[in-house]
Image 1 (cartoon, rainbow, N blue to C red):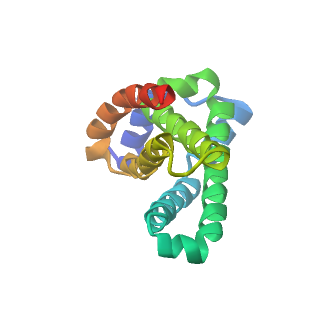
Image 2: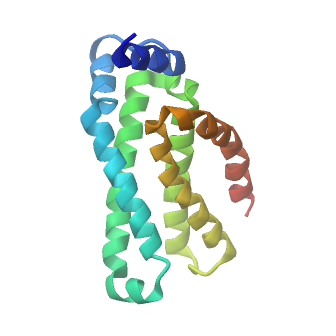
Length: 167
């Protein structure tokens, strides 16, 4: 079997059959190589900026730039998840990876709003920062050998989300 056939079979097993019509075209676009490569680059950029945010010296020099970059990256992720939801409907939630991505996105926005409304040094703000690190784990989707580990982590993500909400 070719890699394309295996990828197609794996995608269908994970996400259900490809929708027909305009929904199928939306899925083809958002799950296509170009968009997924862009998402991967943004994940790497986001991981770098997250690391830079730990330095008080860097934050003093370019903190607002990092914040704008973070909002821009989160906005692209909203577009990606929104397009997948539009294309797949409730079938979107059949995939553990989609649930993982959705959870990370919600936590990212919740953390950003929390940070804007309270002290950045509050314990809950730290919990949101830790949760933001999981964004980098979205890169695991690319490596099929890592999907088993990622799937296990996805199942555990619900507990992390629940614990974060409790704080």
